Image 1 (cartoon, rainbow, N blue to C red):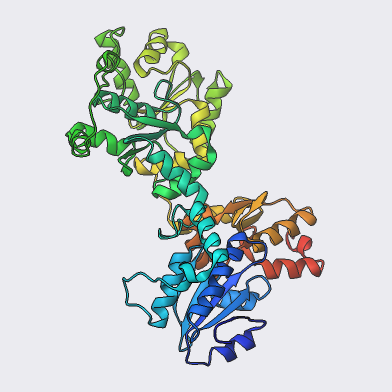
Image 2 (cartoon, rainbow, N blue to C red; image 1 turned 90 degrees about the vertical axis):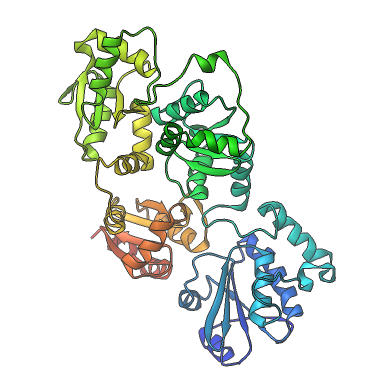
Length: 490
């Protein structure tokens, strides 16, 4: 077996092999996964480079008992075992990290030193070098760390290129000329007052970037402001840094040049309220509007009253706020034409309803609806102290009961990201069962929390009315026995 890769066909066979004192490296793979096939070539060459270690392949879906024993949740996945104990793991297609880990586990190099086995050098031959080059093109460089969980290497590269495209980069809703939410508008105003040149990207135009950036930055809301590739934060942080003078210092320290523009000079925002000044408003009216906006932590300027809305858009926002269990006040803009016209200029927002949270304009009905659907509205309300933040257990309880049949999977039903998830989706569709789903790759808190909540370490996980049914094997067994549909309709 030394110098070659052996396919493991059963748990009993693996247990026998693990009795050896030698280093054992398991490669969990799937035939449908291109990354697995690429890494398999690297794995085979490493077996030649390190003949004293045992290199074993496990087809993850064909050996569920072994996969569950090592908590395999994605492929390719590597487990390093010494003296019967797991000493290291690696998830994802990263040739350099795999070579380093093999070398360290075998004692060929010291911790912190780079590995340089033949698999990554000229002795490997053209086939493996081309494989590494392909992975390098996908990942940016084989010497970089592996992509962040839930992000493809191509998407990570795309996001990094966008962030690096300008020294100051703002990911916002809308454009600087037409912001689509009050928080984005405020940061635009701040940057204009700072007289800095900045680039922007409308996250409403590309949902892949929008969702990917949340995970890339580990920052759940927008806007997001970057300086020389580093995340500064969202609107609250930008406002605080601007008002303290810290933002100007950051730009100066990073060599960000000021620009001179008549347009910038005439569009200075009000530092306190976050609303652009307008010479067309009398001081008395501006003061009245500011008082109205701040009369409640959540303030809605609408047509009609909450119990008698006079337009569908206002009705929708009222419904959303009630669904979020938010206490809010309203002002009927049909009752006062001075307020109705004045607040358009005051906020530089031409339509109604207008929703404000802690004095900051959030936006109109389309923005509020979109924020609710993405979960961003709840995060803003929590961050502003309007509502109590759910514990992870509260959140998981709501998610598991959000649909009678609920599937926690990798990817989405139309594009599963693992074979196990794909099999469960197909089983449910073949039985004609309606179900909701949640992509656990999009939220690491949910992914890890659900393992503890359910006491079930792998994915997918299928729930019925909040109760766990099981994973891929159980679902397929129920289907083959003709019991799946009955189980999910009791």
